[in-house]
Length: 165
Image (cartoon, rainbow, N blue to C red; front, side, top):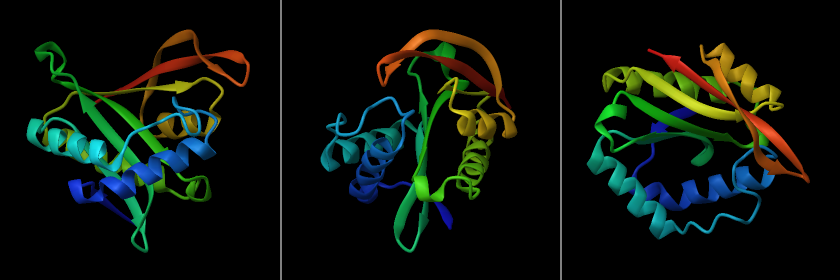
């Protein structure tokens, strides 16, 4: 497995991965089939991130196939330039094999190189694997969003988690 920065020419592979992760996972924001992002839209988004220079996507790949991704999204507000919001997704067959840990290591190295101070994310409270990974990587719970999402007929809470660099 290797980690690489996602480039515009990877847009189709990334869209496919994101949609597959959303199909497999109970805890992603979008439900299976709900995301309508096209290869062209993702290409434009990656180009925009490159131009802005303050957001990035990394992907884990094996045998020329993406198996996981981590996205850092920075705000355009000056008061938040020290911080990025993270989104991560890993194919179910590759979870628990160190993919998430490697994606976070790569992201943290990039963030330090950008002089970022804060990494933040949200996670469904009962997503034990996700909470465990984030805690292992040094993230701490800062708060709780009550009834934040509606999953499988019930309201669920999310944790706000962050790591200061």
